[in-house]
Image (cartoon, rainbow over all chains, first blue to last red):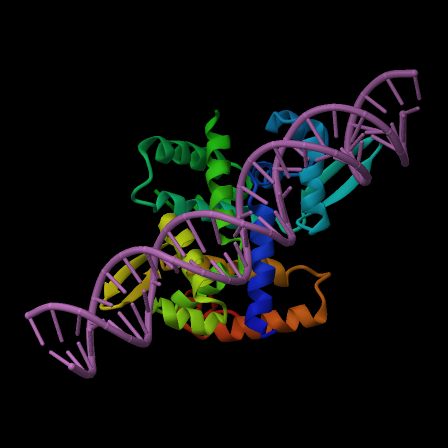
Length: 128
Length: 128
DNA sequence: CAACCAGATGCAAATATATGCATATATGAA
DNA sequence: TTCATATATGCATATATTTGCATCTGGTTG
């Protein structure tokens, strides 16, 4: 298999790891610093099982790493720039001229929110 | 639904559009300029139907746009920077310290190859 | 010119495979 | 035992891949 195909396959796999709302949220949350499972679950507003399962996906693919402290397990991004890269991806959504007003507004808010926190600072400091 | 969730959902959807080896390849090929379906099919080495259907996915989500000329349909990236963004994603694969030698080599080659073409120039001109 | 043929592309149905989610159960530390 | 987290199972849904057919276009031939 040519290297292009290998690379495309690997990259596609990475995209598929990110192709889940909960996991996007998790990565963005962790962009602000490490958090334990319980905090994440509370913020996401989903079941602990679901949170744990999605963390398992990210952990298995080494997108996040874990640190145990007593009964709590704290997760952090293995590569913090990843959160920044994901935020940058928001640009392409915004760039979609056909996007609905509501959608654009949602992203504008999201960008302000996330942009003012942690990883967002990498990208949005000199924009707008 | 809070805007964070909307945004995460939309972004996850975009990731899922990219989470396919053929589509990654297509985007990278189109990063070098527009191409017709036949050329893409030849380069990818997959059936025309598969090529067409993956193009449909990208077309429907307005990641690519089409232009008809005679019996040929030429596709191009709606947002050329997208290819650059994807290439940048390669960094996170390379950054994975656990990655196998073979995998790293494949990516090194891919980076050189793609990096010297079209969209790659956006990113890799002042690196290495 | 009309009929026809072939290339290029799109689309659909059938099947295979993968993914997500909830429920239930397990581990492990205090 | 209880709290925090992880994993297993089973089912529903979604996605991918192949096969076959429909459509459109341009050139060719009668």
